[in-house]
Length: 128
Image (cartoon, rainbow, N blue to C red; front, top):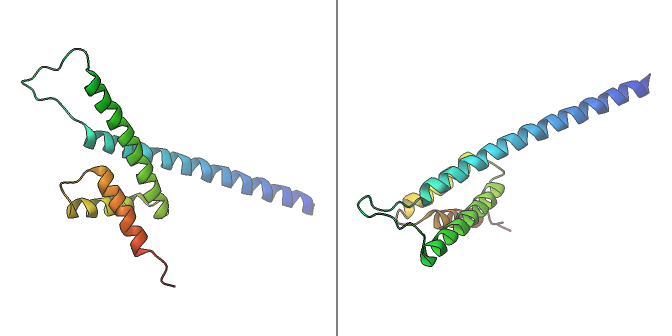
């Protein structure tokens, strides 16, 4: 009889843990999608309306596209690093980046996120 209660308790604990992990993974993936869409929105560049875009991209344009993609991935990695430092709190991440944006409005996303990480590390350095 006591073994049955133990087995039921263990099964219940495992079920709760799996449910929590699934819930956490869904929250994490939606936050990642929001961050990715924000970065795409910020880093979009559009040609002027009166100048027609060339039909085939030149090597220089292709290089710029690849560089923008790599920069976007790097910004996502920096943002994930910052989110890990603030224990997964997306609101704090946004607030830190917004603060750096107000301090340096002429900057760009990579600069703001890196400055937010540097400021967080400086503020949370051990006092010992």
